[in-house]
Image 1 (cartoon, one colour):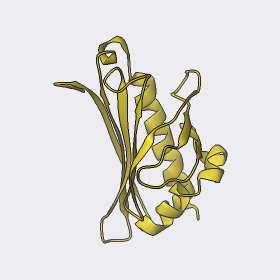
Image 2 (cartoon, rainbow, N blue to C red):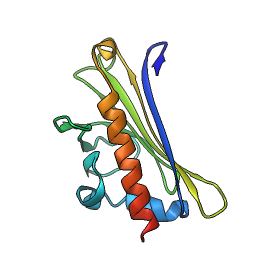
Image 3 (spheres, rainbow, N blue to C red):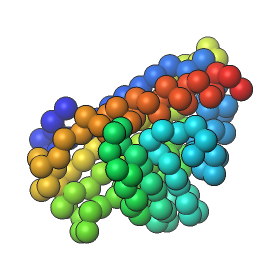
Length: 146
């Protein structure tokens, strides 16, 4: 979906378990290679303001490693970070993983990214969307089988 100043991808899936069970999976970064088809690695201290190292594998594309800054890390609710290509404003991506407690032993998991910058019109994002959807499905499978 094109926005005034960029492009955004918004995905969601309902998972039949409580947010804290999903959070335990999301914050276990060492285990990502065992289940996560999109975010292959998260290294560093995931704390607001810190830079971390993230490796992603968009569906059918070469893996990319970047060093975003953590914007939010709220237990059982949200992890978000923002990364830049070379300098801010050229190509920026703000990635969010959000858990919404449905208060009925289910959780809505939302994964989104907002891309901004002058290079955004040069990129296609379908493979990234497919990567998000694959990760969402695997997270659901892992969380519901625990």
